[in-house]
Each structure stands twice: as C-alpha cells, then as structure tokens.
Amino acid sequence: MFTGSYVAIVTPFQNGRVDEKALGELIEWQIARGTNGIVPCGSTGESATLTHEEHDRVIAFTVEAVRRRVPVIAGTGANSTTEAIELTRCAEHARADACLLVTPYYNKPTQEGLYLHHRAIAEAVPIPQILYNVPGRTACDMLPETVERLADIPNIVGIKEATGNLDRARDILRRCGKKLDLYSGDDATALDCMLSGAKGDISVTANVAPRLMHEMCKLARAGKEKEARAINDRLMGLHKELFIEANPIPVKWALNEMGLIKGGIRLPLTPLSSKYHETVRSAMRAAGVIT
Image 1 (cartoon, rainbow, N blue to C red):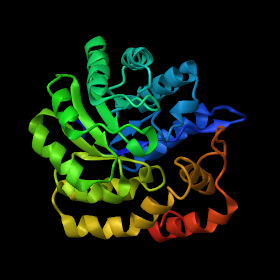
Image 2 (image 1 turned 180 degrees about the horizontal axis):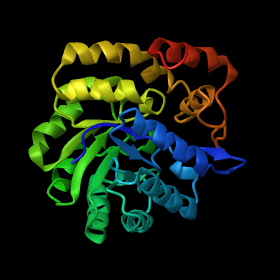
Image 3 (image 1 turned 30 degrees about the vertical axis):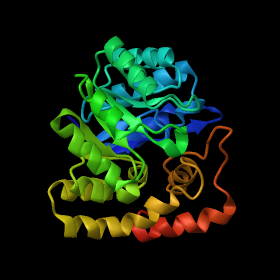
Image 4 (image 1 turned 60 degrees about the vertical axis):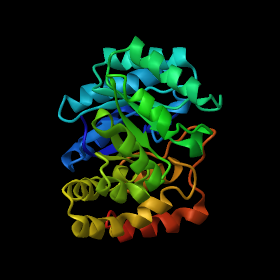
C-alpha cells in the first residue's frame, strides 16, 4: 500500500510545548523534497513523552497539514492494548491513512501475547495497520512466525522491521509473500532490505536528508543498485551518527543546526552532548546537507 521514503518525523518543542508552526514548516519542507509519506508520533517523534491529548493533536495536525498530498501513517502503539486501541481509534477519526503499532515495550509479552495484542487492535479498529518491531528499544522481539500469523488478518498490511537483520527480513518476505508488505526501520541496512523486496524505509535520516533518501529509495525499488548505493554511501555517516546518542537526540540537534527547528527536547532525553557536535556535523557535511 505504501512505498518509498517515509520520514519518522520529529516533534518540535518550544518552551516545553509542541511547536505546531515548526511542525507545519517541516512537513512542507519534507513534501517539497519528495518524501513519500509522513509518520508522526513514532519513536523519533518522542511519542513516549507526549500526553494523550498532545499525541492525538500531533496526528490530527499532521493530517490537516499534509492535505492528502502524501500518506500519513500515525504511530499509535502502546504497552497497554486498551491504550493502543484508543490511540488507533483517534488516528482513524483524524483520517490518518494507516497506523504504526510498536510491540508492547517493558511488559515482555510472549509471542502469543503479541499475536493477541495486535489481533485485538486490528479487530477493534478497521484502519490499515503496520506492525513495528524494534527490540533494541522495547525489549520485545516479534518473531517471523508471529508476523506470519498476523499477516492473515486483513487490515494488518505491513511490518516495520528495525532489527537491521537482513536474514530476518528475508525470512518474513518468504513467509508472508503478498499478504504483508515489509518496510525497513533501520537506515543503515534499508538499501539492502529494499533490494531484497522491502517496499520502503521508515527513516530517521530522512528528517535531515529527505531528497537523497527519496532518490535512494526510488532507485533501490527500481533495482538500480549501483546508482542507489552511490547515494547511500553519501548518507552512511548520517545513518550511523544520528544514533550516536539515543534517537532522536542527534537528529533534533541536526535539524536545529540546519535552522529548521528550535532545540527543544523532553526529559528524560537531553540535548546532544557537546563532544558529539562535530561528529554529527561532519556526517551532515559528507551528505551535503550543510556546507
């Protein structure tokens, strides 16, 4: 249903509040540079520190600002099934195109618990849903056999696989075939994931290099490996250094450095350590996003 470069967009803050003006400007900047879709309220959007009211408002604002020019995939996952259903209903009401549901974090559910959690959300809310597996953040790993079971549910349409494990991605593709689309959630391996059959990348790097990420994904999806890899080589520093501290600390610093947002970030996250400023700045120069 969705292809190409989707930006897991940051949530700008100013004076402790969501900066809707900056968010609207970021959305326009992204669309003008070819981004294929906007993903608000994911990990990069600091969803864990948004109140329910803020979370729902960011999604509604994003849908309003996008004006159907590209798809909006709203992050609505939670470690409570009831809460995830509520957030997903709000996103459906806001007319998001789909929802992205991270595996329940902290609880450490069994594979059966994961299956029942996602089945319950899908049965409660008919909006298209994309699973999101990122065990490095959640301490919870959805195994390919569980993904295969969930792929039989009609409105579960994809998975964002963020382990960076290409063998895992290929296993999911083999098991699920046309029943479920695969998206990379790991910028460093996204190119190879798409060359293996993934439909696109839900990207952190696209926050600061949207045009290059769009072109790289387009070329990779067309099977033009040499041209896609040339762009990806330019971006590899960003793929690495935007995780030098916990996401979204480095990417918010980079966007501030580019003059696109203020420096606001919410505790318990803190601004990028000064010792890493030049490291991230050098990666930005290598990609050509600053001079």
